Length: 265
Image (cartoon, rainbow, N blue to C red; front, side, top):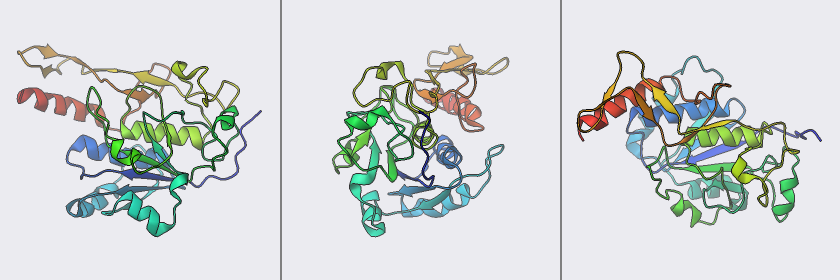
């Protein structure tokens, strides 16, 4: 059975308690708008007052070659305050939580049918999707714990940590485009989409290796020169060669960040 699409408009809500203090963080934030695309709004909440103006200016800039970004709103207030003011029901805000009991399904926004619906206890479709934190630590810390304690219903995206722009991009593709997660680890799990659900599966690449090429290297502690760096995260695959889908310019930012990290090690 093909996916049943009834409407498109979704809102993606991002909560983040600190301003974008690094180039890589800001680039991830900007990339989120293009992952979501036109027709939705990304709300950045719990921002410092000092960061609002700088982020407003940065988000208004293009990120070539990407086009047609989502709308965005910047808020110093918390996501709970914003939800109360806007009349967003908490039970319809989905927290992307690695400890949630159920995986994200193509049916979670009510746009597509899925056999996973039977495991959801007749819950209403979600209207908003909530993401906490940015590209995290290795091993990951539980940055979602404070949001989990607020009682939002949750869904997970598998067991491997993603950058937040990847998590948001994967969520959009699942709930709007009807592409199931398709992870081997979810096969047979209660509440997970099956191959009969949705319109195909997403492709991911885990722990991709970034090759800096001839003439480029980063100096690790101890003086060792590295021409390749493995990133301990999961990314959407951009092509059949399993190239990780990253924001334009992210490779150069990673190169600079690694050099800076090892310089002060």
